[in-house]
Length: 221
Image (cartoon, rainbow, N blue to C red; front, side, top):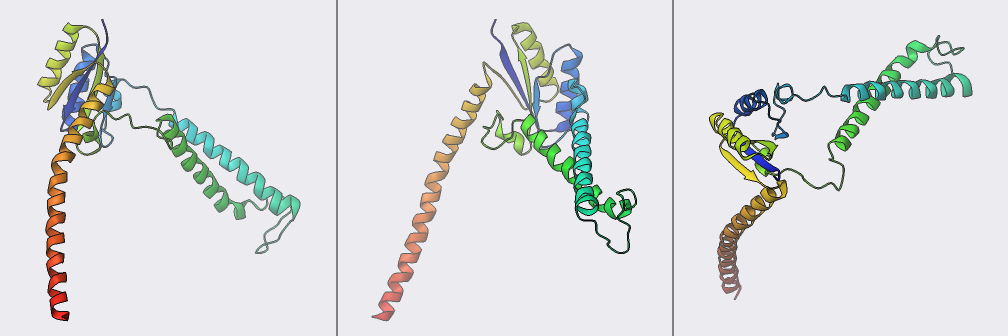
């Protein structure tokens, strides 16, 4: 039997968290939850593994520390020794207090910037990437749960849990693209309704300005 995707839309983070706990407790896997902001405890409820992003941050920070240390040693000690403010320049160790601020800044700079770039690449949010969000309302104030299941009995049970957990909308689709197309169609219909109103407003403004022009021309005559 082909896989079906069950979508449950929630208007409150507590409801989506409660639904996730109930579904996971029943032995089902929550594939994804789309939310406008991070929900505390949701990753644990979904059974997600601990993020290794902190490890990359440490590695990038260490790399920044090593690179700036090598640069300062070469510039200030090895290549062209300088005495600044009476500080010794015979070795890096003796000049260390003068180098601490720059070392700290370079460590933080590398850790922060490279970690953000790693995060964006890992999430597929690099320049030119296409949107994978099946429901644009999750960028505003809604929470969308996505579950993949093939058994019709299990799908019925999942829908029942979602309904009891105060889901505002429950949809079963054959693919994510199907839901995206549905929202694109809704948006197109909405735009078509808005366009005539905009055109009416433009016509009113044009009529108003034409009257002003005619009045000015009469006065000039």
